[in-house]
Length: 122
Image (cartoon, rainbow, N blue to C red; front, side):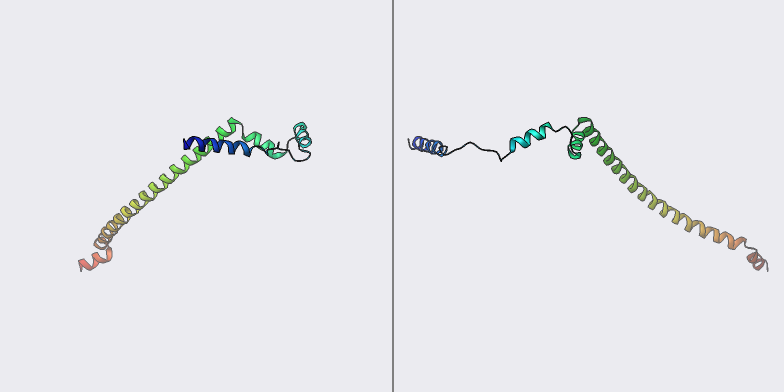
């Protein structure tokens, strides 16, 4: 019973709050400005830009372009990482090969060097 009386009391308060309501009035010369704007034929640059951007084909093309750029950036990043790893591996292998080949070449040069042959023959 108390809930019904509370609900009825709140409904009565809500209805009483509507007693002082008046109709909303627009700012002065609102309708004049509105009709002038609607009758105007030329559009400014922002209205033209907004009309162009809001076309579905432009929006779809923009989304596709952004997705393509993101995909290219992703693959370029992967390729750069792979290139860096491959470059490091090649440098390590080349340096190891150079050390071995330089050591072997120096040994061969010292053995077949004509100055050393003279010293060996003597």
